[in-house]
Every structure is written in structure tokens, then in C-alpha cells.
Image 1: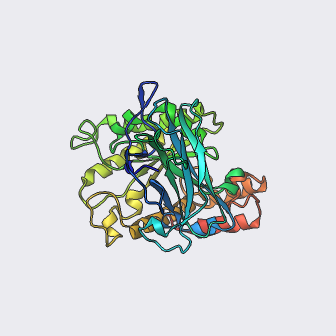
Image 2: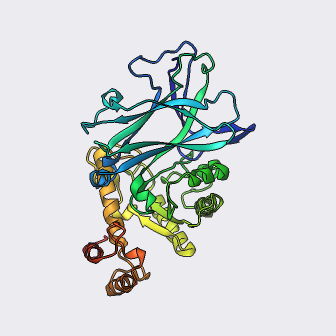
Image 3: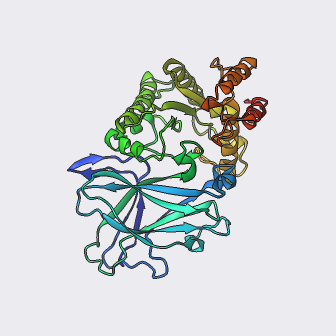
Length: 393
């Protein structure tokens, strides 16, 4: 099989001679003329997930479950886009972090045929039944036949993978990991590149309804958003992103209208202006109060700076080391577990929350299923009281 060129980017794709930006970081490879993949590693591109590095309870979540990696492929009416390809599952059985895909165990290869009559995004699942490791992935290449003449110069393009526990998703509960990043760094670039027609395809492909949409941008800003002080246009663009996500859920046929949650990220290392983080944090809090949206202030929660808790982080920029990312994830989930015991709606955690919880519990309200096992019983009260006792600071 010919092949070999790999690229990762988020440009527009042509559909009926119009440009569209797919949601998610776009991945693509092109089969090259006279290019040859290694015979023992036929796959031209990979998507890997190390869930244990971002979810503290990953090992428990994986146990005795069918885990699905769902990949959204870009289907266009352009002749240079592949509609058939091969896919294989990848599992790192020893669970040891390493940088070589060759150390992953390959599953059976399968031919995939996309529906060329359906333009937009189409999902393809790779299911892992009782996976032996939290490090799993998928590999993609051209189709498996030996006639590659029609494939030379053709591309395969897809969006970020989503990951979910299939058993829990079928019961509309449990952990579901999904993330899309829509081209650009500042709010303006996200507003200008997110495409409503493809975003609703993305929502429709979700294994369960979206209850929340997290809007988490870095503190980059364009010249019309920050001039030494925050300009009103920045907040308007943040609201536009939330409104567009809500509309996409509606257009996808979802009966659940998701609530946007605005996140203030932590400061990196002083490379970005300190007062910009403060101003953006205040604006996000004001938007969430005005619109009835959520707001999570990681900037204050994590000591304001990545460098304050991640010794190996050397910046500049917003990205910590692997150890720092795990620390951040642990703090994030602990904080979410803590604040979810606020049941009275007054944004304070006190006796009124206990009273509100017990009243809902008496009516077997689904909100009181704190351990997510689908059964409302004493174990949920125990879980509630344990998390209520935590400090959310």
C-alpha cells in the first residue's frame, strides 16, 4: 500500500465548493505517490488515549466494561477524499507509558466504508471489551487491497475522538469524555471558525445527550479584545460561543438543552498579563450570573499559576507537564465532587443543602444518585455526606 504523509491541523474543508471548519482538531493523512508504509506497521496515522493521565478513577471506570472510541470522519464531495479505509484497535497491555506505538498490541484490521451520499461528519466506533489497559487507541490507513492506484494523492480527514463507557452511556449515566477545540486561540478566532452545520452533526453523534458544554479558552486575546483593559466584545464573543453550542444541540434533535459552563484557566507563569486573567475571570463570572450559566474558577482554585504546583513546568504557555496535568485533573474532579452537594441553589453549602437533598431523596429523584449506580439508596446518602464534608476552597 502506498502512503506516508501525516499532518494535524484545523483548516476548512470543501463541501459543495463551500468551506467549512469541522469541530475538533482536524487530523489528516495523504497517500503519497510511490510512498510505502512499513510492512510491519501499515497504518499511516494514530489516535491514542491515556485516560489514566486525565481521570483519577480511570482504572475503576474501565473495569468489566466495553469502552468505545468514537471518531468523526469528514465526508465531502471532493474526489481527493477517501471514503474507504482500514482501521485497527491498539492496546498497550503492559500499561507502561512509552513513546512508541510499536509497543501497542494490534487488534484485527477492518475495512470501513463511509456513506458518500451523506455529506458532513460520520462517526465510526472502535469498541474495546474489558480492555487490559487505560492506554488504548486506533490506527487508520488506506483500504486493505493491493490496488492503490486510485488512492494515491487522496486524503483521509477526521476530528478528535470521543471516549465513553458504552454500558453506562446506554443507561444515560456515568462518565463520558469528549472534547472539541475549534481552530484558534482567542475568542474571535473561535467565533469565526466554528461551523454550526458541522457542530450539530457532532452533537448528533454523541452517545448520550449533552447536559453541559464547557467553554474553556486560554487567555489569549486579539487587539480588539484587550487594549490594556478588557473590551466588551470579548464577553459578547464568549456568549456567542455558548449560544451557538445551545443552538447546535437543538438542531441536532436533542431534547436536552445543555447549560454552558465557563472556565477561567490558571495563569501560566507570568508570560500573560496578570490583570488580564483577573478581568476575564470577573467577566466570565458576570456572564454566568446574567445568563444562568455555570462558572468554574480554576485560576483561584489552583493557586493562580501552573508553575506554583508543577516544578517541572518551564513555560511559557498554558500547558503543564504530564505530572502537572494529572494534578490538575485530580483537583478538578475533587472540586466538581465537592460543589455538586450544593442543592439549595443559593451558591452556598450549608444545612439547607442537606435538607434539599433529603427532600429530593425521599421522592427518589434521579439527582440524588450520587454514586451513579442507577439505584437510589443509603449508599447515595453516604456519598453525599462524604462530599459535603469536603472543603471546596
